[in-house]
Length: 160
Image (cartoon, rainbow, N blue to C red):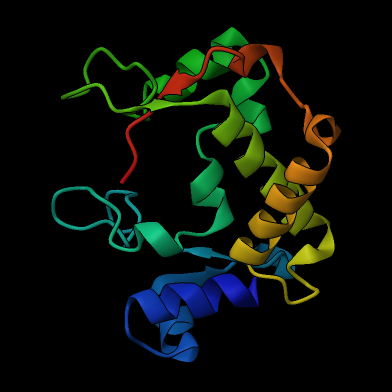
């Protein structure tokens, strides 16, 4: 979204136009844009240590990874993604990351769903959508009870 591009460009201290030219590319058939990857298939926004250089401004797709519907579809898909994501209890990972509470996962997935359903097109930023959800959750605590069975316990995932 334009808000994400603005936030990412700000985190890198560059203009949105320069950010788009250097760090993103068009998807086929005008399906939008995606972040560029290097020759090894790694996001160009990862630093030399493999940590995200724009963590606080990362786009919704990064905020919700690896908790995408296709990865949560079955234990097999989750295990398959664990082979490439060091944060999903991968036994080959250098260390176990912090525990991510199910509430946080649910909120990130809901924000992404709202963003893709048009809230981003309305000019709302991630923080504005999150603040609105927090206000709704405070006013009507039971209104946003998603509680997917696969996420009830929380998941260990290393961020950054």
